[in-house]
Length: 229
Ligand SMILES: *Cc1c(COP(=O)(O)O)cnc(C)c1O
Image (cartoon, rainbow, N blue to C red; front, side, top):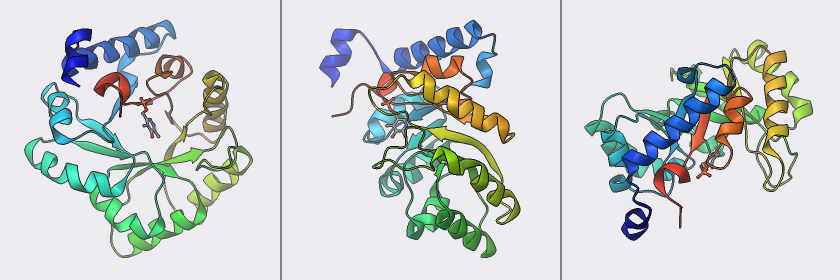
């Protein structure tokens, strides 16, 4: 890993600065304010020693896709660094809701009534609710989590009326090999018609496109940490 860093003359700090700059350029090109775009640094598969340089460089918002993995890394990092905000970006089983609530400030993957009901149950027991994004399976891929686009409006309505869950935005992961812009534009349209202010979309390969199409949260792993093994 250090070999790759040396040959590319990159450090976590320079990668972070480069990604921030690319976000800023894309935002300005779309006549948006760069500060409106939140960079979620996706640290899944990377250990504390890889994460620490980004924390030292000032990054505080991180994403993890597995509850178990986050539970191993983040409690100790949170003790060492103040102001950390952790985002869950992977699918969540209902039996892990309590543990996820211990760890994460924001869930990007609310994707079914059972999970909404599990959240409500936890709230009834006094748990504070996380900030919530609803995941949409914009490509309608059978193996992928997320609501079908046709079910989104009704689900958001149920969140508001039946469960009193405040949803702040939508999230998607476009299918591999398809033009991501089409999926980002679809997500933006669904968010707008449901009066949801935030859009979690864009990863290392397409975050500039996402920013141009309105992303408020980009989830970037590889471009910050180097490639995952
Ligand atoms: C891994 C992951 C990312 C980051 O992907 P990169 O291509 O490494 O930037 C973003 N979102 C989700 C949901 C992920 O699982």
